[in-house]
Length: 235
Ligand code: NAP
Image (cartoon, rainbow, N blue to C red; front, side):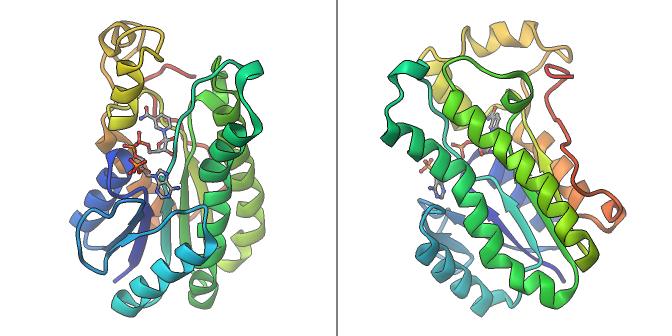
């Protein structure tokens, strides 16, 4: 049975990915700032802090053994005119969205290399495709995650490990509703639905389904890909 770790697994997309993988029989552990529950499979850690990530993974390995599936979903948004983004804010957004992915992959990778099999899925963002005003730090970080995905896929392909990215667009999670509440979306979710080709908001389960496919044995010949799940908003 395969052991999976999902970062950001206490909320939104990460929680849906964890649930989906559990329903398919994977053993799943989550890492998040605030854990989903009290057990050893829901670890509290900040993905920007390597010592915390290592400690969380040690706890998970103690319960499950080696980890061969990693989904990086932890993330934060940010909305600010470029000239107003001070370096602390710039660095915070880059740190969680990009450096967190670096830490988690590097910390899990030894298990995958030993197993000569692994699956890594990075949740980036459709904004890396389209650009997004007032989100230069976020878009820069998510674009870098797509780049990391492509480069690492080439490095790890010969080792039996695939690396792919799923950039979501407009998915109904606390992050999206929070942005709507702060009037950062450029309209309400309802208004955006009318501009979305499939005429609905994305569900976390839509992203989870794409991740589950990329993690499956059926997807073993797919690596270095950026699989948009966005209702046709970014084609
Ligand atoms: P969400 O509901 O806010 O979930 C993100 C989770 O990551 C939260 O539980 C959050 O904890 C956690 N997190 C934040 N910083 C962390 C850190 N330093 N260490 C560990 N965990 C941390 O948002 P979501 O919409 O599901 O987002 C999931 C991923 O999808 C993110 O990478 C996001 O950028 C990406 N995405 C989402 C959309 C969308 O439409 N929803 C679109 C494009 C991309 P707290 O709540 O405590 O901060």
